[in-house]
Image 1 (tube, one colour):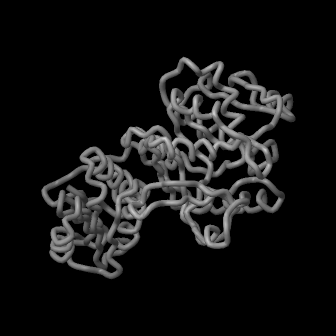
Image 2 (cartoon, rainbow, N blue to C red):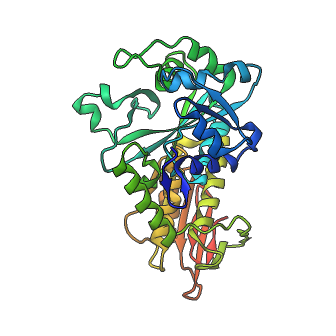
Length: 358
């Protein structure tokens, strides 16, 4: 975790993500071997907890119990060797956890290449029922591409009693945090997931090859940055949200708008109804539709994403036919080429480049 990665150490990226959400005094760093170097590097602004015996991830979290046993709130757990999560993914994880009022929410990723991570097992209704670690997975299970990527939000008054009941793994005798997830699921408690869609985020650092891969990912981000546009306004008119491509109409604002709609669907308990998303031939309208689809899917809301351009009336009809919670159409409408519009409303949502969503 103290290897150089870009202009910082690996652990610095993890700590920076935590600092987006909480102050220094609310960050607890569990350290074992090499703790002196870690303390020296991070300084005195954080709380350090010494794990005398390295008995696994569940055991590491359990070291916090004497300090946090009286806290009745949420605990965010991040691994120190997984530095590439984007802040938006961590915020999405927290948002999902609170909207669903879950006991535990974990970050997952659907990948198209192999990683040595636990596989997410779901039932026919899409509910998470198990996590099977790579070392224990059969050949069939290893084909599952939804992975547990190592970020969690959990209620403290739930997790510590569960950790105390953990048994050591028969594979390596460690106390694994994922075994605690099994326990919560079997107890009937609400366990949720939030899915991120940038595969680069899940790259962990365990070998020199991993470190080289992470350095390449950072270089890609340098040349293809996600702009920070938290102050951008998404203003609505009679036809939806309309803005100039690359200024107001950005993928960042499409994500913000889609998350707001996903929040409303979740509050209303309408997730299973899903959404319909379409686009026309205006520049980047297909990309905007895909971006919106990723946000809804990350919130466990089923998406019907049209595979070719379609007029707004057709998308409106499909939304009604499917009884979807919302429909979105990203469309040019009557606007000049530099504009895009996004038009959306419950049971009918359309989005146009230069225009926006109701």
